[in-house]
Length: 283
Image 1 (cartoon, rainbow, N blue to C red):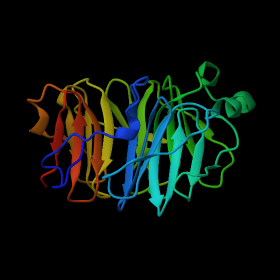
Image 2: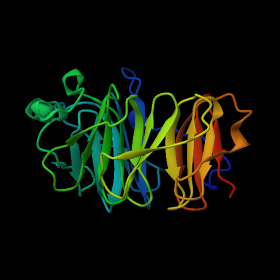
Image 3: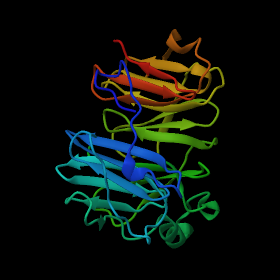
Image 4: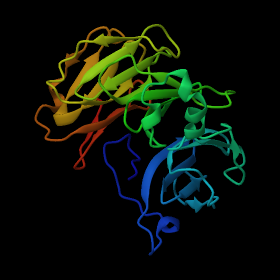
């Protein structure tokens, strides 16, 4: 879907280079920087546009890619970072003709090597991520498929760093705050914020009125203001950097689960739900 009026109206677009009679592709991630854009999907497909999506070119991919591509980020001119659900991170600077591996081993190999270091739940690891999120400065946080531990990666590191979760309940999703710290959501509706900025294993629970529904995503509009969204139309807002959250009634009458919160800048924000529900931030 494409909008040319800031999100007021959306038009469905077809991409001829992704229409293959033998495959029904599922697009997992899209990212633009200026007029350059990228899409990754499953079965393995990579699309690139240099003209703001007017035309899309299919870029060939190696059949040896470990895992499914779940995330892509446009980082600069002809440049992008791509992540698979097995923890491979690839970087291109020539519009996808060549990719350089930023991580030297799979997450499974890292865990096999470090399983004696006491990462709880590592022996149950099924080899894939449940979620992965990138910070503006290129750090990543990923949640294991069962939600029993999480992993981080910073540019320059040879492999992912596994971390024990200090919380009894399993992790639903994790991401980056505007101040560089981490937020963490657990199954059943709990919200936690890491102490300090940067990567940490110390988290503090923040009381929220999620009515027992799971919170699925958090999006920051600024360092002080953020929104959290979840099951059954739960929409929460903080204006003090996450210390306290209040329910926003905007979605109370919407019978949808809200999956994703995204702010393009401090004036443009969206919340995406199932059944074609899209909320637009009005200020």
